[in-house]
Length: 107
Image (cartoon, rainbow, N blue to C red; front, side, top):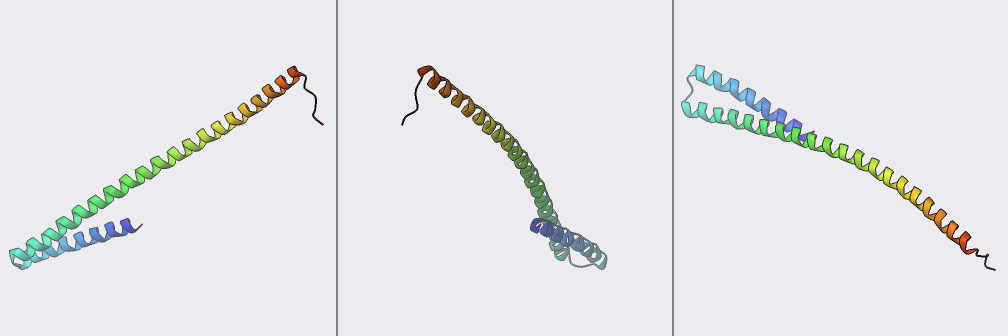
């Protein structure tokens, strides 16, 4: 949210300075002043574009991580079920072996 606020602020600065540059050109303001304000417009635009592209990249990364997490949870659930099945099967094998040995209960 903070990054979006900063990007919006940069865009507002860019637009306001752009109109100020246009007004200054019509008023005959010295070239160095127009250049410095024009530089503010360019830098604000570049920073806003960079920030917006960074926000989009991070959002895409977060979405990819969410999908990976969902996939990992499904795999973990499948592994847990497989472990429970293997444990049940192992218990059955042990009971079968005990039956074959005809063991008696201890006292």
